Length: 330
Image (cartoon, rainbow, N blue to C red):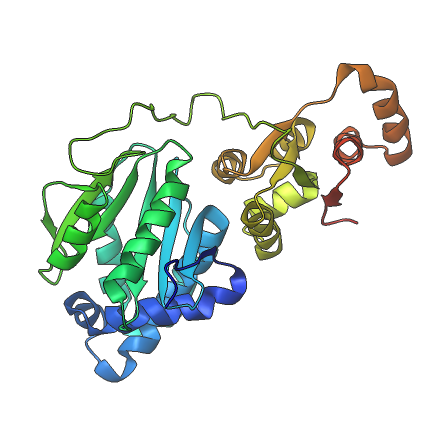
């Protein structure tokens, strides 16, 4: 075995492996048995619910896996209220059947104990029962913590076993007052500040609240790979997997995606969900773009041809950055 365990950003094609990794131990846990008492159906029901949240995390968070798919970490960016997955109530009802009330009750308990301050939430963390399991867990947790820390926000996790609690503590998470899940499982809410390696050692960087200006990117170092026009921004706000996959691919390659401010304004004016727009703007790979005043003549010429100012700003931005426009209307 090599000294380095490669950690990869998860893509849509990795969702089945993530679901399988998480559903197995969840089905064997006490809370899993409480959620779905019927052993014959338990794993399938839990897998269906986990899949909903794994898909949602790739739109409103990030997921990481070891290259051999032996471990997975699924994160949600809780910079503000995270909207539920599209069709969540209906999909949950179909998956859970007679056990729907139990899943809703668990959601309520977890939500009641979750921090309200902006943070990144480790929603799922699972390692397969394979050789060097502890090392795999440590590698994945350390790497994904570092990537979450780039946003200068704290991270939050819920440990439901003492082994999980101790693992998180070794990586700088501080346990807070435990609480009980509906089945009686003791759960330890754990909080970690950016750069923290051990309890009591806090990084000096301050977290950014949602009402503070978004971080700027050094565009000379990080290139813009694609521009989202108004239609793509609106599609993202509606939960489009196509746009989410495109964003994830850009971020995975270390690039940025551009959001022309006129397109954002038009998407907002057209009624796009403001919470989802905020999440898009605050994405670590997002760059909000304004028009160079010296290029007003070029903008005018494009606008005359397209008839739409927001479309013209997207095309001008694509020309400036030598990249494509992602659009619902090619």
